[in-house]
Image (cartoon, rainbow, N blue to C red; front, side, top):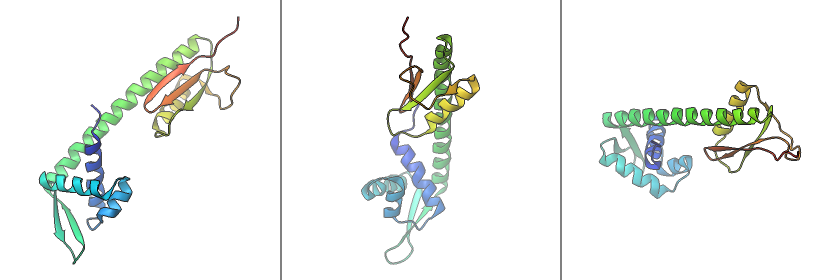
Length: 166
């Protein structure tokens, strides 16, 4: 099961706080790419869960302390995230292997890889590595649609075979 956005944010918050207990909510928001209010909401949730404590370090400065419950939560969230990531890797690798077999069965020894969104490069890397493993060359030039295309959309990969004239 894919980790929730909240779980991933809480894991990232705990990691950032562990690295710098004196970090500000504004800095956390910048590093996580969210609003300060979102960081504040997550911190309050972590405090309610008993995972985090807050102490006043100076007049306007706060210090965040990860409790033993917080350490346990961080460990659980990390394990869940790693398990999900490995599952995604295995599924994607199997999917790309199947698609490359289809291309090879159709008589092709090359493919192009095209990304249709601005997602992470991880899926593209899996495609490249699987091509190498299968001895399929990655074609970087557009040869007028004469090469199959592995199309990456987020975590989904599909194959578009070129039309062959008879």
